[in-house]
Length: 104
Length: 155
Image 1 (cartoon, chains in turn green, yellow):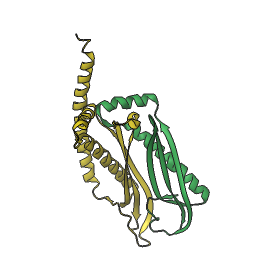
Image 2 (cartoon, helix red, strand yellow; image 1 turned 45 degrees about the vertical axis):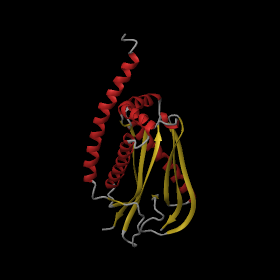
Image 3 (tube, chains in turn brown, purple; image 1 turned 90 degrees about the vertical axis):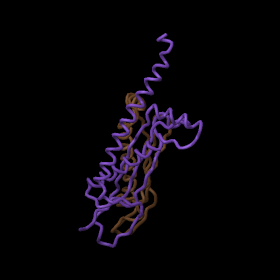
Image 4 (cartoon, one colour; image 1 turned 180 degrees about the vertical axis):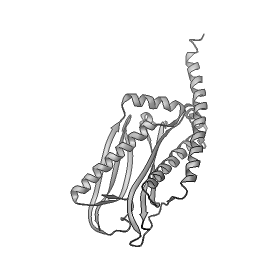
């Protein structure tokens, strides 16, 4: 599955268009990690636990989107966009959407 | 006497800790950012889409990089004070700047790992996450994500 965030797949031609596909996931961190993060908040710096969490969940959202595109019979997703929102305290929603197409 | 001022002592200790550890970490982070930016200068990143003549592109793939950076106790206090008078909130400026540059660097690194020659249509996004994300007036930590399409050319 080819994923790009431009309108086309460079060097290839779009032959069929399937519409929007999307994938999302809501994740929370366990209490221990949250506690560590709040300690780290005192001295500042990178919160590695959160970075990892968000990367994993973004990957998961992408996989769900890919799955949906595959079911439609697409072999590429173009124009992918990401969005993040925090739905509740300590939980974040990761959302990925794009256009499923078939390229040659 | 000691017990009466216990809260005050904790407060002062936190400020000192936040100031010293925070500014040390920030300086070290900036040094590493500048060093890695120099190393990755050859990897071209553009925000334009660009068009390629047929046959020039071997493959293309999505690359992304992200970083969650939080602000220290001292700077948070400075920002709250700044809210009273208004003006530039320098402590948050450097926080967001660090997060964005780190995210772009990670994206470039992942593009280089995949053997890409350039990254086109780079997009940046920032969001606040963590415990304080839904509370007003408090930016706990910011997440910056950079993503784009890595291009591997036909040589």
